[in-house]
Length: 362
Image 1 (cartoon, rainbow, N blue to C red):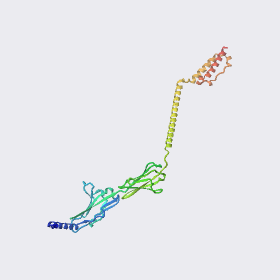
Image 2 (image 1 turned 30 degrees about the vertical axis):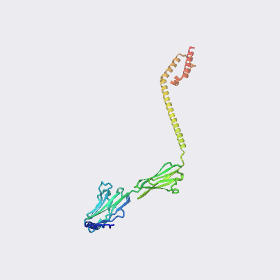
Image 3 (image 1 turned 30 degrees about the horizontal axis):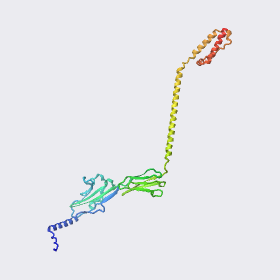
Image 4 (image 1 turned 180 degrees about the vertical axis):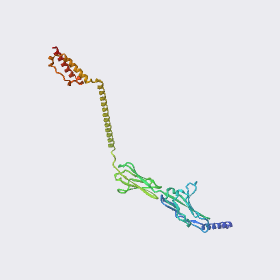
């Protein structure tokens, strides 16, 4: 068996390539370098402050002007990088990004010292994104990316009760925050009494619902819900009052009786109003009929003259001997219209007149 053939010696071209690679790597180690950050991802709450690190070391071979630049890399690849702040030619330029105007600055007053870190104040949720620090000093160029996530603390958390708060019924306690970045987590606890959740309770931490099955009066009390995420917490509380079932039949019967009484009273009032209206109408009709049937009254002067004239004619035919039994009627007693209309008085006057005529004949 023949021994294996030894590999051929490397060619001169390969040796030259290896030498160039070693020289190139040695040259790169001598150019500027950015110190690796302890962390490349930051999570902060809205309203807080964050410092994005970017420290570097210059080399004697880097002789060009120093240029430090912070940019925001968009999530959409079709968009361009947005310059936030820049140091160039010994000046700071911070007017490129209006959304952060007045809220950003270099951590060091003199970035030439090797500290190009960036401070962002009063963080907003819209500040979330990928930031890149670029350091240039010809011929050296280095960069570093940092991911920033601005979270919103839970806020305006509200508690509510769903379902009938009766013995034997299922009741659900609900909890929800109007503000807050995911992932939100909810936790219920009992404040009063035994301070332990009922044995039949079921908690969903993602939705904030606490289901209490077959509730009893022992479940009554104050319950508190705590909403939380990675940057903060918020809470609310509500009181549960489990009561005996309501007498539905009695309520319905009472409602029916009350309705009937109300209808009866309404009918009575309508009847009274109609009756009163009919009475008024009848009185008006009767009064109108009476006024049409009654003739216009005679004047008293004509009645008195006719009465006096009749008496004079009667007295003129009488002799003095017949005057003794006759009683004169004084003028002050002249009959009125009512006197003429009275049948009894007319009969008396007629009888006295006949007596006078008889006396004259005799």
